[in-house]
Structures are given as structure tokens and as C-alpha cells.
Length: 407
Image (cartoon, rainbow, N blue to C red; front, side, top):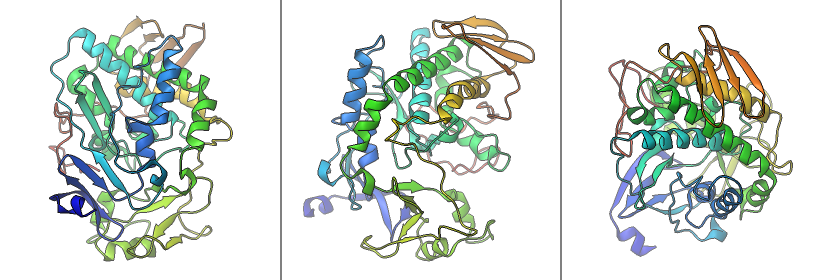
């Protein structure tokens, strides 16, 4: 530990839980929280990564199908992955993508669809543009994935709930349109995305969802057996950071909870979490993070959304909606008046009519929807270009030319 502390620390991100920060320590990043979820998804020695690679190789996919995810070394003993103290992660080293050929755009489009499917299916959220990287690794592969994984196993029915696609809720529409994660790919796929690449995104989405559903039992069994899984916090965001920043000068609605005021008073951004299989929203009450308090279960307090059932093989009624309405949400997010007529690839055919979308799947199934999908999703195309950068990380953004604050 002394060797670690001797290295220069560069704080990153917000302060949580009695002044704790993510910090850069040379070529490693110190994260003062449990890293189990992150290790499972991003670890170079993750058993989940190994399992999905083996399963994909046994199907007409490829063991490389999920290699768009960052692959990092974690310097926390596996047996301690569920502890609160945290650990170190290899600093992510990527190079920016150069201008892509037609084949390169097709590859990135497929990866975008795979990412939307995987993160929606695993119930990840908080995937706004500042939580995503896009670049090439040392082996030349395109990498598109999160740098933090704290919110998992939520029962999602639409990919908008990941924050990769913009939610149409009027209360949050402006911020979601501005900061949705898939805007990272627009500098390479174009604005608007060409119909062939839009179908590539949709095909990657459908193929990946089908693969995950076929292998749901094996994947859920592995997650359920991960060390310390049931004692590992899963973050719960009651409000966005921007709201907490405003709370110092502007009354919020709904009013701040006592637990939020308590944390803001010590100059922390409030941090809440849940445990898999347990009731309630929890938070830490003293600096050692040993004592935990729970918000009231009843009354005018935030309530938890459902979680995916590991014992049921991660299956839920929401999966059908994720397949069909999720597909239309994807198409609607990237749709543009310039797109018209019929387009097809191996995974699906789509007819973009003046008022309706018609989707034909290889199994003969036909899906129909109004072309106006504003009830499901907002457009990813914004007049501004902030966030639509070619750097691996999105630079720190507070305002754009539209004066919309990023989350």
C-alpha cells in the first residue's frame, strides 16, 4: 500500500462517500468502490468474457464477437472483488479511430448494435457519452465500451434505459439527446447514418440479443456464482450530478432527502446503492464505510425498479419488448427524413415509408410501426457537435452552443 500511495495521485470525477475520488496513479486507475461488475465485463481474465467468447465460437458468430469491449487488468484479488475498499485498474490505452472505409463503417455499425444489445440485456445504465470510450487497441480492434460499470442487472425493456439512446421523457429529453452514448459513433458513421449502416446497427442488435437469449442460463449461472456477488453494491442514481450541483443555489423538486442533504453537507455528490436480492436503497454513514443505513421502505420515498432474476436465467417478460420495441427504438433514434425506400442485409429488411416502418426478419416474421417513434425515443441527431469528437474520451463538457448542460 505504501508503494501505491507514494505515486502521484490525480483525482478524477466527483467526490463520493467521505471525499473518495477515482484517481490516476501512473499507469493505473484507483477506484474506491467494488470492482466486481467492472471486472466481469471488462477484465482480461474475466470468466464472463471467457464464457461468451467460447459460446460465440461454438455458434455461427465468432469468439471475437464481444471483443469490442475494453480488456483490462484488475489489481484486486478475485476473492476480494466484493469488498467496499476498491482497487486498481489498468489505465485504458487506445488510439483514436482514423477516417473509416466502407468496411470499417460496417464494422463499427455492427459493434454499435452489439453494444446496445449487450448492455440492454445485462441491465447496464448510466452509459452517457462521458462514460464511454471509442478507439483502437494495440491489436487494431475497434473498442467501444464503458469506463465505469456500477449499475447492472436492471430489468430493462428498451435500450433508451441504458442512456445509450435518448429517452423521450419531456423532463429529461434535452439532456438525454445531448449526452446519449451513441453520439460517440456519429463522427465516423455520418450524420445522418447511411441506411446500410443503420441496418448494420439493427442487425448487430438482433443477432446479439438472440445469442444472449439462447445462452441465458449459462450466463446467469456464472454471474450468480461470482465471488461476493450478493454483497456487492449496485449503484442507484436518485438524481443526476447536475441537479446536485444546482441544489446549492436552487430548491429541487422533489425536495432533497435528509440522506442527500447529509452527503451534500460534507461536499460529496450523494451516493446510494442496492444489493442483489435485498430490499431497500442504502448509503454509507461514516468514513470507514462499515456502517450502512437504509432509506425507508414505505412512504413518499424513491422506490427501486425490478431486477433481473438470476434463478430464472435472466429471462423476463421485458425481453420481448426489448426485441421488438427495442428494435424500433433503435431505428427511430437514427431515422432521418432523407432515408426512404427498401433496404436489406442478412439480418433484416426495412421499408422506410412516408408514415410507417415495415421490418421483415429472416424467419418470415413481419413487424410494423408508425415511422414517428417519438413515444419511444428521441433523435440522436443534434444541431450541436459537442461530444461528437474523434478523441478516445469525450473532453470535459459543461455547456455547448445550445447551452445544454451535460450529465
